Image 1 (cartoon, one colour):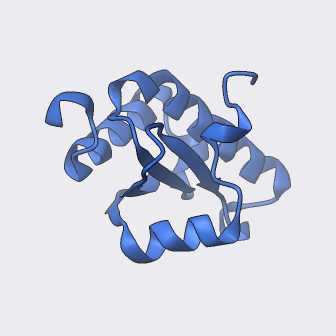
Image 2 (tube, rainbow, N blue to C red; image 1 turned 30 degrees about the vertical axis):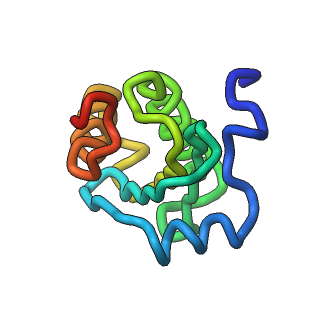
Length: 117
């Protein structure tokens, strides 16, 4: 958990709103990925899981899974982006391979992978 420092996370409501309103998105069954360029030179992550996907245990599990998928692929992303991952119903039940593939496919669609995708 020490790897995900506060400087690497989106916390404030205005940061999320800015990405939602002015950013790009890619939607699929397991997650929604929003992204927007920032001027910080580092890629930051925000995760949301609404009560629609289940109780607190389910939401926390979904958040942990999305955080891990991001952590494993952070080096493949271009620097200087704000990325928000929104959990969906399948986030909890999907296999790790499927989550990873969906994340990379979404990033490729949004053109935020290192080397242009």
